[in-house]
Length: 288
Image (cartoon, rainbow, N blue to C red):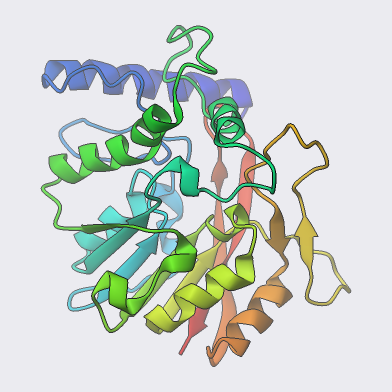
């Protein structure tokens, strides 16, 4: 599909969402940045940059999650967390306490992080907020990007998902109040960490069943376990992402962390909206 068509469809969805929220008396949500497309019912669909609805089956999650506990690390708008709950799971959602806790390259500032995120996120409509970049403080962007969208969906769905605030490095059974989770989901999280092995090692003990990991994994035939550095060289530019371990690297790290069997089960595929840029990410299942 042509990128121009994807752009048009995205902004059409954004206009429909704005119109529907106004009809329902839900206030002015134009400043919200919707990471995920979430179908909330009653004609209310969030205009997300990522739309995972058509590739859900590729993740091979259990169809019935009743009686299971699920940890969703870095929920953003919450598409996966709400889908887990819809299928019967007790879900714990983890998000950062603030953008000050987002990993930054040594010497870089929260303001550089904010500037980068704003450039990466489209305005909710072409005519909205001209000169949007720089229009948010770190506190405002945290709300409009992470907390506000999740809370909006949580309230509308009358969700019982438990929300916890922590960096991935600080996660533990004690601070989450649990003995572990049947399913742990890591989607596009570790690439935003400066220390992906440390982050993975913090999450691994929380998983007593299956850990599902999906993100960019460079595929270079003939190369052993390796991490690709993608952080750039400009000290004035925060790239938000630094390390892309390849699939073999992830498999070996997960096995060393105590998972007996690790395999690719599918691909998370789609296009970013409104840019039309394709993504195609391996989905790994690690079994205890």
